[in-house]
Length: 166
Length: 159
Length: 137
Image (cartoon, rainbow over all chains, first blue to last red; front, side, top):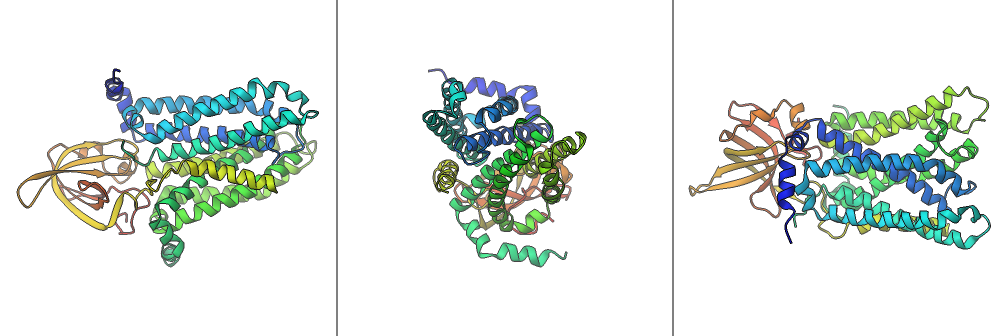
């Protein structure tokens, strides 16, 4: 199986990726935007999940909250993905070899599957939540899983900074 | 410097020594700090979005704000509990970091603003205030709290 | 109340699950030994002026005549620039002195605190939050 390392080395050697990596303001800008957008996005996801598990905003129908928060969550997700991809381009070999980065990607995939499953099933039947407690149980599970996954994603992202050479 | 005895006292605390020596403890504390900060910012944002007219609008703003306030208190407590040990371990070094000092000033401003003006506006009857008031309060609050988050990250890059 | 406990446990578990093992690091104390201060005198092999940490590779002559290459971790370019250091202050082959602390595991890795250039200028190259040795004054 051909190694992807030469391609990553090529990416790392490009003039623009090198410039960002060595920049006193470019890299800090991208990385800080990445962290800030994650905090904004995940913060709103946590609020939604807390509603679904019944810990907060309990007198608000969940659908109302989710519909209004969704565009902002997507904006935060878009910005964190864009800045994340940019960071990968700027320092590809470092992330490729970093175990916490790989863990973070796996967790992100799992969070995506959980969100998709929720949006495609429970969410669609949400109008009936007020009447049907059984659907709420599934929603609560998805929300609980989401809380665990996003906490783990945040932490694994932070741990990328701690060097652990494979 | 007047603060010197206080800072040295911080570094000498048994808690600081424990954090210095235990790999596990410091990593866990920093991890919980990040999750607590994210939860805190989430609770701030949902009300600020509402103040700006963009959040969940069908709920009475006051009820949304009161529910968010409970999250703010718990998450805020967790942020403090996990933030203070991180500071005391390296109190002297952090005190010499202009970016850290700026973050603390922003944090103080954000706390005062949130506990006073923002709270009054958030729970006020929605017809009573001209629309520019809640909008401005929401914008200032977001700016202050995102500012604290961003400045915290910049300590690594600019000292 | 039970629900609150479950959620707190869930969030904590989520956070701690990523801590994995005792190899999770404190930025300074787990990687570098504050009881092993050192002074390295040598010549610059190359400087990686990069974010989030710079890396100085220097050739240090040993007492027995051999040359050993050391790797020294520095703070970010923004931090070093703020103190007046520039990327082009580093010229391959130039003499330099570094004071810092040795790594716990790697015998040729160190955390740099003070850099002294050939012209006598001295700079703090460590990050915020290291040992309290006064190097950052």
